[in-house]
Length: 151
Image (cartoon, rainbow, N blue to C red):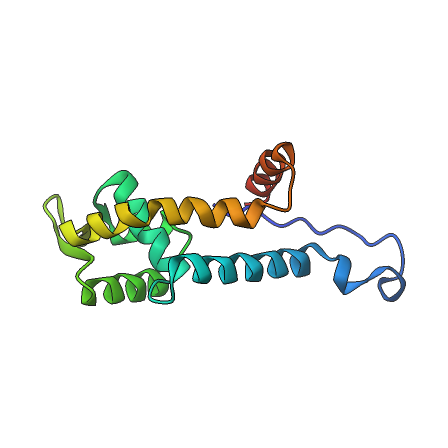
């Protein structure tokens, strides 16, 4: 759940203090772009990071309502629907009505989806390893902990 934003008064004039190359959002975007490039190189071009997130979450947790799956993978309702639709077309997931609430749809891996995901797990681990390779081992854990605080 996003934290409420806090407005902080600037202590010096923005035009003197603002250097884009030193801004957290800009640096995080560059790091994310590098990570996606590594992801595509290792995982292949037929799977997006958002599709992988859905497959990995379903593999880890089992079936889930589409709504909950979206929240667990940090996707809004429209995005998760599109991702699930693309995975349905590839027969990697299937949907069924929730037996407890007919308004909800449960998304789960097909056997092909489970096999595909299991086969890609070592590659996914390599993506993380390559992404973090420029950092020392203790820096990797620190970075992950700090990023978690920014969620």
